[in-house]
Length: 478
Image 1: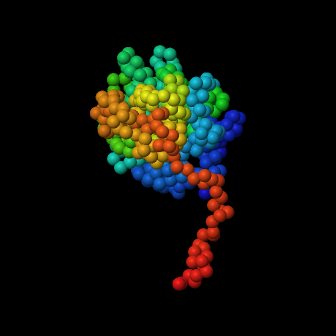
Image 2: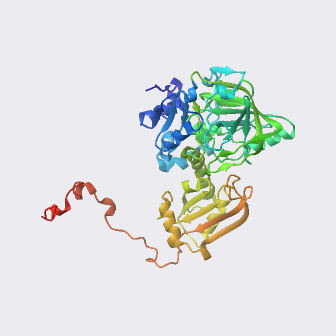
Image 3: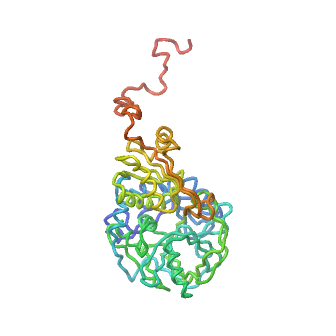
């Protein structure tokens, strides 16, 4: 079995056990039997994605010489909520609180002059020749970088933004980029107004905490690399790019340096996205690549479109942000969950300790205003486990009446990637599935068998395979 590069020595000083590099996380996954090493030569077109999808949620996948390329591919790093908790060093129930604390208490990064990510520098660029960039889904328009952290700088303040965007390889040194209405687009529009390009870096192959930090929903001009430092418990080590002023994680595997071109748009898409549909082809933004730097013997991280890694990586940071947002106005909110059936973006379940009638509807309105992706909201009482879809469905089935408990809002901004909308414009819905405070005590009393949870089945059950007829003294063939 091929060996996995070990985490660097300076990573061991982290307050968390995994260090600030991808290699420390791979060590952890391998120790816990969650890393599948795939034989050499798997096809870059659909082969890598197919195997990664089959192992999704069970183990990460490390592909040796994919398509004959010397650089291995890794996928499925964060395809389970419990793994994210392990990366943070907390219990699963503490993930949202830990993430929100990091957003509120970021740590400024520290710059280093000898970063691992610049051990090798290529000024002559050939993206498909130098990197093993796969094609994922059947109708994708080509090879895509899907796990790259796109880092930009505010052209006025210099404050950075970190996010993940799909990046289509459209030439040897050219990438097509889908920029949705977020902070990266705001920075670019400011530069383009002055006919200036916007400096960028695309970072491929980061530790899981930095990946999660990139998805934080925070106000503009909050550098997500500082949130990554807070998650690590120490400032993140960064390095200045070779060809521009962007600072990137020093322990990253690969960095693609370039510029978002002012006044340039080219065809991009289709591409298989998180809603399990294809994002359509359209004129989109363009990145001109100026250089590629990487570690010795680097690894290339890819996220298969629509995979659990894709869904959870965006979902859990959104949950943390939404929980904090709602609690500021509604102290009764106990927990939130972006359901997998709603692609961890569109369906939000909220658990409240109800104190007054009408409160649940106010919570619904607050949630719909918290992020434009939220499409359907269900509010339940504290006796309903919002992490179990059948529990939420049960609450809707037995506590909700459409004539009094339904909230409908038409012609509102939603996700442009939701194919049921009109270019992102559609309707939103909230369901109040809480019990009326004036209901008779026994009307909504859940059934319960006393002592059921404490039963030790191994102590009371006969061995598997026991013949029931023999227990009654009858021959088994009678």
